[in-house]
Length: 336
Image (cartoon, rainbow, N blue to C red; front, top):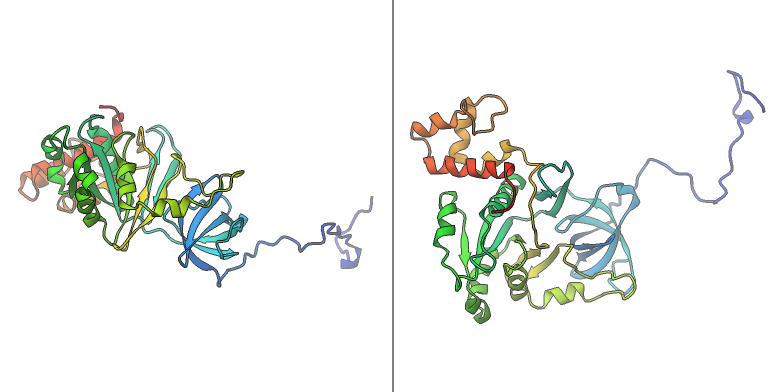
């Protein structure tokens, strides 16, 4: 074997031929300045259905993105075949900065957080007033995730023909959360659909709720035709484009300029990723009172400055109670 000294000439260096005949790998990535702008509508087994210029196309993530994953609602840059024709495939080469994220973990001990939806303006928490019984703790957790991720919450209460909404609404009255109450009869007549639609106009709204509350039924009533348009191009072998209960789905709200994002039914909503200091931003009347709090204050301890702030009349005591109830939701299980 030949050994090289300190003063070798370039001609003495033996280079290994590239047997594949392609260009050598480089760390310099293309900028794709001519890439088209699109929005991710749904993700299914490595294939992402996107909307580009009014066309629904199938894409995959470019290798250069590494482990960075695109989710429903993401604004992305796409290159390749943008015709939307059957069996064509384009590439997502860039994921734009997100304005908001709805995140959850499997449970409160799970360090891995999952981004469910990106760039939504609003989180509609759908819960039935009966059959199944409402789960206030799960609602609290969804509200915490909304405040933490930069989404405004909306309560949608279904099946009011089976139970009155007053008791549940009383729990959230001090949070000033907008709400819509619906019944089965109103849903069938379309009256409830129009009331919900008024809250969605011009906004991107993610719908969450556990199984049986009528979430997907409501979404189907809001966008009866669009679900088939997005999920209609299904490959019988790969299942590409098929929307299942394991993936979220974004659908345009006709005539209102908004979007509805249907998410899978949840059994739990882990909050291991939530920093309590971000939840306080949803309580501007209390946030100013935290200036005297000790470092890393949980806002539910003896030295918390919020007690004195409320006692001096700067905020309603009920608001402080609501804040602490939401923060405590992180330490409770999702069950009733």
